[in-house]
Length: 163
Ligand code: GDP
Ligand code: MG
Image (cartoon, rainbow, N blue to C red; front, side, top):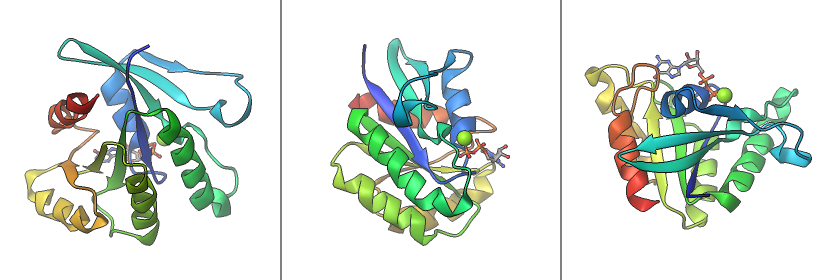
C-alpha cells in the first residue's frame, strides 16, 4: 500500500490546486464509502522513484458556512489517523488567523511529521510575507505557489524524506 500523507487546511487556501499539481492525472475519487470518508479524494504522488498516496481532506464541502471550523477539525482528525505525514496549507496572502493557529495546535499534538506550505507565494517578493507564518509554530515551513509550481520540488523532498 505504501505511505500516505494528507493535505489539511481552511477552505480556499489552495489544497485542491496543490493536490492536482502533486498527483497530475493520477487523480481518483473514492465514492460511496460510508460516513465521512465518502468524499475524500485520494491520489498517487511519485517523486524520485518513490510513490506515496495523498489525501485531499478538503474533499468534504460543508453546506453550512457555520459548520466550517468544526468540519475542518473533523477532516483533520480523519486524515491524521491514517497519515504518515501532514501538510498544512495556508494562504500566504492573508493574515494569519485564529483558526489556523488552532488547527496547527491540533496537528502538532499528533507528533506526526508536519509541514506548513505557505501557498500563493507566486513571486520571490512575497517570500518575506511567508515568514509571517513562522509563529504558527510549525518548524518545517515551505513557501510555495501551487498554481505556478514554485518550490513544489522542495516540499516533496522534505515530505518524502520522512515517509
Ligand atoms: P481549497 O479550497 O483549499 O481546495 O482551494 P483551491 O485549490 O480550490 O483554490 C482556491 C483558490 O485559490 C482558487 O481560485 C485557486 O485558483 C487559487 N489558488 C490556488 N493556489 C494558488 C497559488 O499558488 N497562487 C494563487 N495566486 N492562487 C492560487
Ligand atoms: Mg478543495
